Amino acid sequence: MSGKPLRMSDLTPVRFTLLDSSVDRVGLITRSERYVCAVTRDSLSNATPCAVLRPSGAVVTLECVEKLIRKDMVDPVNGEKLTDRDIIVLQRGGTGFAGSGVKLQAEKSRPVMQA
Image (cartoon, rainbow, N blue to C red; front, side):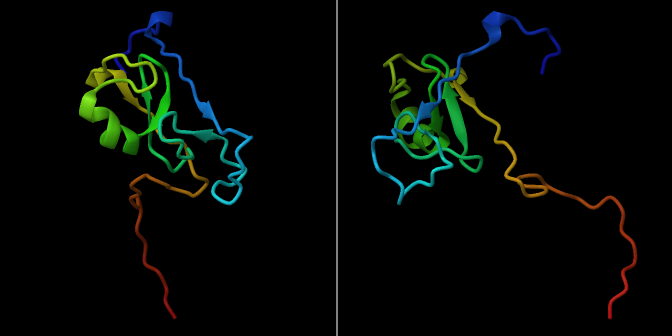
């Protein structure tokens, strides 16, 4: 958000881990969920807060970051040391509901008739 133009060296590759189709997890995970956390194998969705680990590009849940990764500050995918800058929190997408995850405030208030 600095206003400077982006360069290719500023970009980070992001690798989502696909759900293993050989494991029958139909009872646990619906078929619409295709991606999982690279470490814990928890399903990822629009409602799941996620982060990218810069050295490996792996997508993990923020719960995994707080409980497992921040203790040692080591990337569990490739074993490299991490800094706080290496953990990039992803902004979640919309869920289909109006105003989801956003603080809404009325702009106009008018008298309402009540019966």
